[in-house]
Length: 88
Image (cartoon, rainbow, N blue to C red):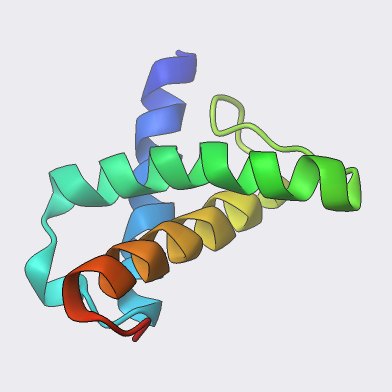
């Protein structure tokens, strides 16, 4: 059951991050899920040591969703920087 929740929360986090970073037209549902799940890992790596906060996408919580969104935004900013030479 945790994998299903992780896919749903990852998809929502990736979709919201792609809306913030203006990449929604170039990403489908598969890439939204991938970006959201990887963003969750990045967000936990950033938020854990700095803020002492952790969240998981395998069990739904608002903290985990916010951390996944922030991590996905960081991931998309890095991808934009590599592909386009600018963050946005």
